Length: 108
Image (cartoon, rainbow, N blue to C red; front, side):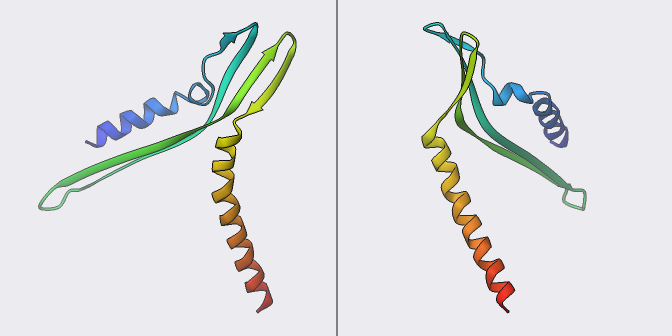
């Protein structure tokens, strides 16, 4: 089992930018390159005691944040507004709560 986790981690470290940037697509004379925000993680462990046990797990997520659109010599980024809002709402809540705690701690 530990070898499986190591092999998965090695495979994913070689992916790099290929996972965040999709293959270019040609549509109506425009070249479109999709862009995503992604993260992943894996873990594993074992207990070599009397009753040997091993385990592992992993997970990840991908959020499509937009696309680079090339028209002639012009390149622009077009964001996916829905995905950006979905990511920014929890971030804003977390930042607001953290700031409130910092202010409360400074008042003491």
